[in-house]
Amino acid sequence: MELVLALAIGVLAGCGVWLMLRPRTFQAIIGLTLLSYAVNLFIFCIGGLRTGADPVLRAGAPLTQYADPLPQALVLTAIVIGFATTALFLVVLLASRGASGNDHVDGPDGTP
Image 1 (tube, helix red, strand yellow):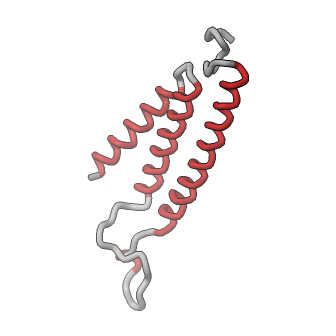
Image 2 (cartoon, one colour):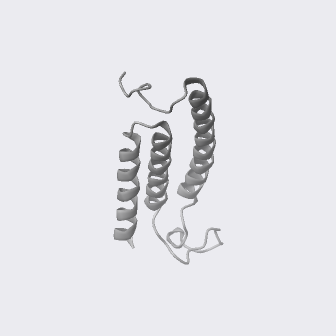
Image 3 (cartoon, helix red, strand yellow):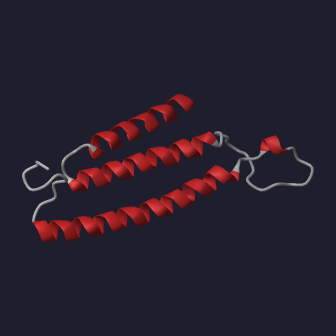
């Protein structure tokens, strides 16, 4: 299971970086989104992969039997912030494309 998650994180991060280096603005936004998914999955995996662990503490049970709620809370917050940031980037992209007529990152012909 750890190998599958490590490969998924690597593929998401690699695709995200590759898309961020593309000349179009929309591809760069999708690359940022994929990179944020990779980071969220990495943070979630840091908390430890446990199946069947109770998220709520019970009296008298050792703490090693429970899932750590902090990575889950961090990932949930990061998902909400990432969604809002992506929505803002898309609005700025549409406004920029409407004002300039193209969506190249470096300018109309690809030169700075």
